Image 1 (cartoon, rainbow, N blue to C red):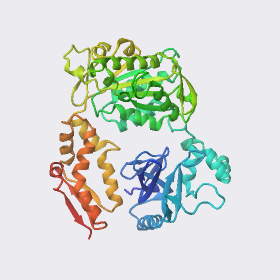
Image 2: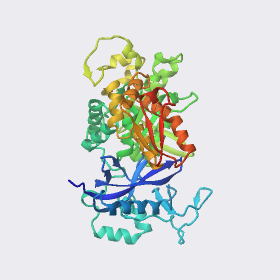
Image 3: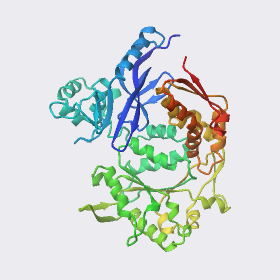
Image 4: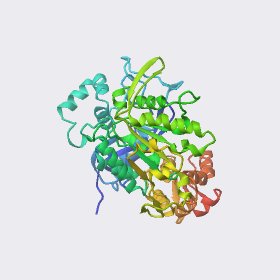
Length: 493
């Protein structure tokens, strides 16, 4: 049976720095377009290159029935990529709309700035293909209207906002669309389905009319590298409310040298683009909260004071503070607070287990407020968290699933990176297993996978960099994981 795909798209690689992204056309591939996401013939999903946080994304989609085996289609793809590679692509957000701009010009560049700005002194030139137009129409309507009014008039007439392209909220998914959020989170964070359900249930209540005096604050425990921070980094990317993630170890009580609780709230205001009303209904994630337990350092008095300062925040109070000459008044009564930490000493206590949950690799003990109290958290503080969630430990099988099924794992990122250089990354049988075996024994959890893979590819990457265009295939094996000199590079024919 012939495989017919509904569209063809250009996949770009994004090279980022703090202020901008330079993007390179990598390949043209066939696939289907569903709900704003391009799914290639291998089932890999790509978001638009402008909006995605990943290194790879699509743009310049062509809608047509394509049979990849037909010579005509292949010639079309080669012709298109050759044309694109002669252009220069650049993404920046320096404009009054705070909208990302995809700039297309010649390769001439002076001190990081594009030379050929629009003659009418508007924003730099844009590649206004169908996907680009729809992207701005959906996410930055005002920018498109003011810059290219004819386009928005035509799109309005066509009711583009209906159906598949219905105009979403600012970040795409409503915070109460729990079904879609669950699908997104479980595709990014492996083997945490039950904890994710508990977290999303609390969020759903918080933002679906739960009494305003009953904030659904959540206390989360879990070992390093199991996905605590990843869950909220992913939510921050997709949901339509401001989320700020802060590290508790950076903060001190009032009167001490260091950051204060007000700085946490300022991060939320920044996440809300200065809209305090939105920030007050946002989510504040305080990571490493176990590091401010009273028994965790010599300065127990100072740690208790930090907890007492945070207690004022979770109780629901109004904070007045000055920053950069501006006066802010912030009401935390509708703020959702997530406190997270590893609480590693709980596992060493040998206390009676209240309940059990089995993940793929280990049994995970439910934690209680008593556990938290005995680990240096003051009862007044932990008593303000009606929801307590423990993330599953991740063992060998979980690490292997991350490598084989995780959509954003480091192997896929490297595979696509080498592909844009014309080098196919090949893993011999047992390589994934060797990585999982090594990473699952580390105290750093799934984070260790990145370290192991990058170390294994270190010398091969340097060899490819020294000889651009020479090699067509890079082969790594289980032996490469133990010794990064044991790889094979195959020259192009």
